[in-house]
View 1 (tube, protein in one colour):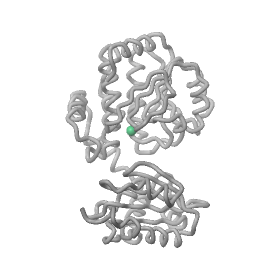
View 2 (cartoon, protein in one colour):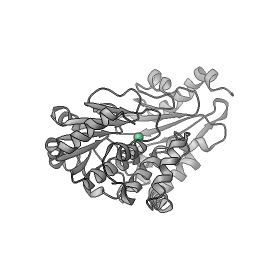
View 3 (cartoon, protein in one colour):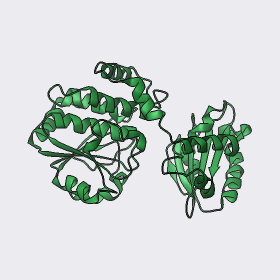
View 4 (cartoon, helix red, strand yellow):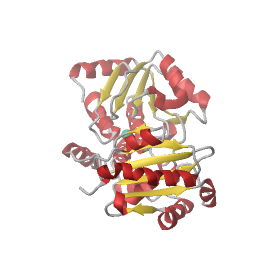
Length: 339
Ligand SMILES: [Mn+2]
């Protein structure tokens, strides 16, 4: 993953370091947390004091991960998180390409004199670390940490706990191998992780069969009452008001993934989710294939993103927002037509 010269430099930095901070992005997902814990566990086995700093809320479905006690959340334990960053002589930045992605931690990251190493797979990383290992074609940072542990770190540190964290990172960033994983190496890596005795079926259940009853019923309500399918535009959308969310005892993260639900309807290639917040309506867009949802987001919703995943905001009422969304579809009809 890196040439021998860079490997040697990194090994030297690790040897010279006493305290290491592993930092990941805000609103962390399975790849962010799984990769960070795996790296911290590996460095810990090499005798380093390695801690993980998360900018904000750890999702419930990741709380069982091995090594979770090595993590500190800046939003809840600010002083301890700052102390970890300030006290580190080496900082790893995992799964983000822009220092803005760590919210309030950015200030402390920027002013730290520690050596910094980025390991990331997002497009167009900014330069804010001394060394950047960027492999944008990879489905997950989990794979990169696997290679980092095996090719850059010294000694046999891989074990069942580390392998379990990496497996979570890989399955969550590839939708359990349904996207971003069409190359042989990822399966070689997973094959090797299996050798450490990871319990793949129970990991799957811990990650995916972990919704609250309220969240599951909210999903059912969305599908039964709120999903609008517009076959002529290969488009479907779901909307939720604050009142509806309240009815289902909504907790942060409950609507995560709802924007993907309509893709299960045959023919749908453009989906939208509109969720009412205090003073605005947050819009999320997804597409399959070449339809550029980032254009929709930037042209109509003060937002942006990538070709297949983007978001923005609406400052109109829900009714006006949905009418506006339906009204803009004819303008994209050419791009949404049958292949
Ligand atoms: Mn990732």
